Amino acid sequence: MGYDRLFFDIFRKSSNNEGSGYVTDDFGEWMLISHNKELLLATNLVSKAIRKAGVKDFDLYLGYFSTDERIKSLVGIKGMAVTKDNKKNIDVRTSMRSIAGDDVIVIEDQPHSVSNICNSTFIFFNFLLLIKKGKEYKHPVKLLLPPMGINPSEIPLSLTSLFKTLLERNLNAVCSLNEVDASDGSRLKLMATCRTESSFDTEKVKNALSYFAPEKPKLFTKRVGTRDMEVNLYIQQLNVKFFIPLLWNNFLEQLRC
Picture (cartoon, rainbow, N blue to C red):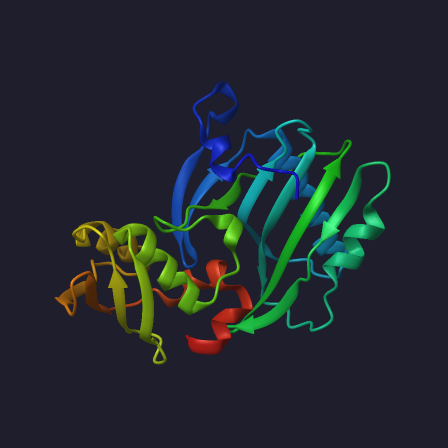
């Protein structure tokens, strides 16, 4: 889409990032951004569009943010707003286009969705904007810190693709998932077969998957061929809401609160 400076570029140490911090809440781990002009401008536009769509009280979370290397005002922004408002007809795409004009040009507005998950309404959005001017968001913005191995530009994922990606990138292997079961919302069981040219570093994948629970998961491996390994994974005390910013409405397919 023409923008290739990844979201974590804004984390590089500079005077512009003073005041940043980290926080963990019901939906995952976040970096608090308060001194990035493009991000704050884009966030303010999204907030304004959500309010124009009729939602007055909400919490805003960014899953991904990027700027173009050559055109700094060309930004990609995706994320979610969480509200107790039970409205069904929330059209953020239309409201974003209605506020465009002197301040912003909407280059792309990917399909968004509104889902009721865990007794809250989630508004998921994905925009590519050319920002000409505007006001900055007045509060620190929560920007997702995903588990190791997940590029937030890939959001939303399915539960299967999430764990396949986590296994493959942290084990340096090619994996096929035989079972992923988290239907009761408190525990997760995973069985996979992975092929690799080298030995497994199981600590790396356990560290990545501990993102979803207060303790490291239990992981067992068994060689089933020259290069193939069977992987069995168990996670207790699952922080099931941590999956929502990664899966969006795909959460409803295999998980529940």
